[in-house]
Length: 291
Image 1 (tube, helix red, strand yellow):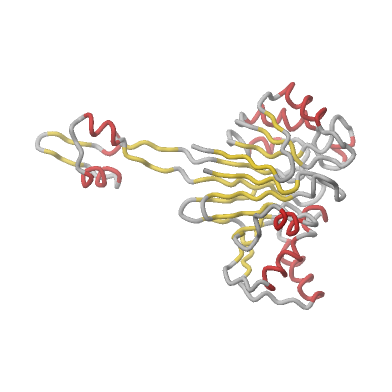
Image 2 (cartoon, rainbow, N blue to C red):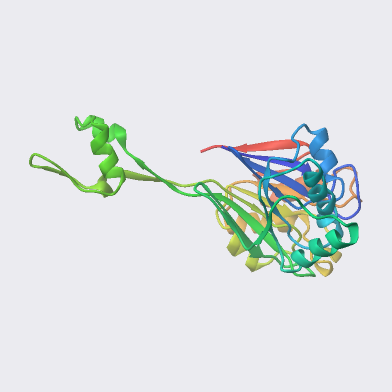
């Protein structure tokens, strides 16, 4: 199960929706994508906290996506964090963090690793380029595919010995008298769940190709129907829906809503005309993805 917490779903200037921040949880792994101003306070107010966060991904260095990061890193230090923190983002992120530390006289008492991707035994987090006005990336958070044994089929064939099942799962051929069991006949690949977050982007083929067939797409939907969206490297809500359709994703969440829209319902209505399985997440809400 993967749970996505919508900490801040607005964009640009501070507003009631909060600035970009999305916390993705899979068992004990917490990954935060973008850290807009006020994110750590919103995490505290939501009861989620932030000390369990293991990975932070920053899409780009525009202020509404990154100005909450220095304070969060320093507070982790004040609270005596010991666990390593992995930072993903554009190459300029390292210099930004280093300069802030120098100017604020802060030295972390925990390890900060700048990396291109994150991977453990269950999860992989990778970057993809987006089409914004500055160097910018989106992120794919995905469970690794798992290979399971078709135990029910084996039982139907009268085989209940777990040692045989283990050998087959390990890819080994098993002989039982004159009967030969081949692993490829009894192994089932269970596809992992995939979530994509674009950060800021205009609609483009790079994004469409990167997010194909994800289970949930969080796509820039800054405006309702504005030509200026493309000038500033953003998308209208119907653009996000078109990307979702072309990429054959399962669900679409509209994010980075401009503060000019006190009521964003019209953005949702426009998107649903193009891609029906669209929703408009409220701040502090969450969405669960299950196998």
